[in-house]
Image 1 (cartoon, rainbow, N blue to C red):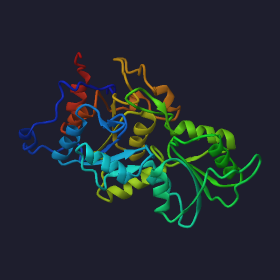
Image 2 (image 1 turned 180 degrees about the vertical axis):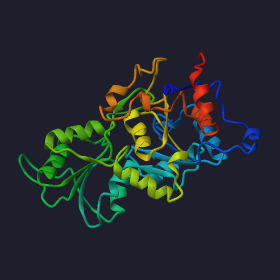
Image 3 (image 1 turned 180 degrees about the horizontal axis):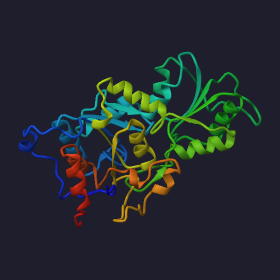
Image 4 (image 1 turned 30 degrees about the horizontal axis):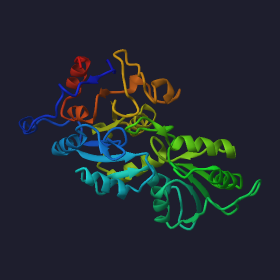
Amino acid sequence: MDHHNNVNRDNLEPRDSARQRSGRTMMFDTVICDLDGVVWLEGEPIGDSVAAIAGWREMGCRVLFVTNNSTVSSAAHAARLADIGIDADGDVISSSDAAAAMIAAGESVLVLGGAGITEAITARGAQLVDPNADAGVGASLEGVDAVVVGLDRRFDYQRLSAASAALRSGARFIATNEDPALPTPTGPMPGAGSIVAAVASASGRAPVVAGKPHRAIVAVIHERLGSEFDPARALVVGDRLSTDGALAAHLRCRFALVRDGAVTAVRPDGDEGDAVETASESGDDGPAMDDVDAIADDVRAAVWLTASSVHEVMVACRLRASD
């Protein structure tokens, strides 16, 4: 089977209402969709992404948004989605939620990150430690139970010193995610993974990662979708092999790779060019291009996959249309 499937957005439209009324069995009933680089860039919709989400829902799909962006809370992500016309109340999971699930009430937590992390952790009943406290050279921050590191736009030497001191004193090291870069309209910017790497280097400790594609966020997804979740009828849509592709593998779902975000170009031979992440960078044990079920120019093209049989998808996707 040819796994390098390419969906051209000009030719593969969402099925019309007549097709939807035909009574055919839908291929998928759950879509687990990334946000940054797939639905939007810094809150601005990408192409027809809003219509694409509406198309999935009109076909009866549950759409769950799962993001490694920890800068704001899941509720704030949902509010921003509402601002662009997507109702996502209760349908957003972030890496902050997964990290907070690893914290117990009453624990003392030092956070390098934004409001998304601090709000999720305080909601668990934990106490925050000020990372701007002067630990001093060689000093320790005893009594800190965990250090949680995400995308921290206030990151500096003082905050690095505090985090590494707490970790040297025995605190647990939790990372929201390891994404090295964050897609933006002007190009990739340093992501949480860059800050996590700095803390790991300074402390000599390796983190437990909470976000995609790791165990903590997989557990949160299963909890949110409930016992009716059927991986065989679910599709993960994202722009990274190492996170979204691996998440699909852990959930035992199919995976559609969208080229709008971290993967900016996919040549006909299946290699990624001019991209933040390539197949070889996803890790020796991570997913490769052969693990991708379909490649779509954008999220709108991926909608077509949910309304088709496996055979139709594979046949049509092999016919790469010219741009």
